[in-house]
Amino acid sequence: MSLADVAATHDGTEVSLLVTGEIDLTNWESMGERINAEISNQTTAVTVDLSSVTYLDSSGLRLFFKLAERLILLQVALTLIVPESSASRLAIRLSGLDQEVEVRPPLP
Image (cartoon, rainbow, N blue to C red):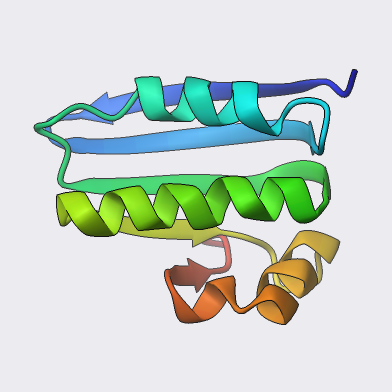
C-alpha cells in the first residue's frame, strides 16, 4: 500500500489541505474519504496543495475529478497548488483537469 497523508487547516469557511506522499490505485478512495471529511456544508473554498505529492496516477486524477464534480455541485471553489515542474502537474494538464479547476504554482 502506498503512503499518503492529508493535513487540513480551516480558516472560517475556507479549507486548505496539504497532501503528501503517493496517490494511486491502492489508496485513492481512502484519500478521497479523508479529503471529503474535511469539507462541510459551510465550506466556500478548498485549496489542495500537491507540492509534496511524489506520485499521482490515473486513480489519483480520478480522485480530483470526483472532488471537482462534488464541489461544483456545492458551488465551492477548488484550487490545486502544483509546482510547474512536477510530474503531477504534467498529469493534471494531460488529463484536462486544469480545464475544470484552477491550478496554480506554489507561492514563492
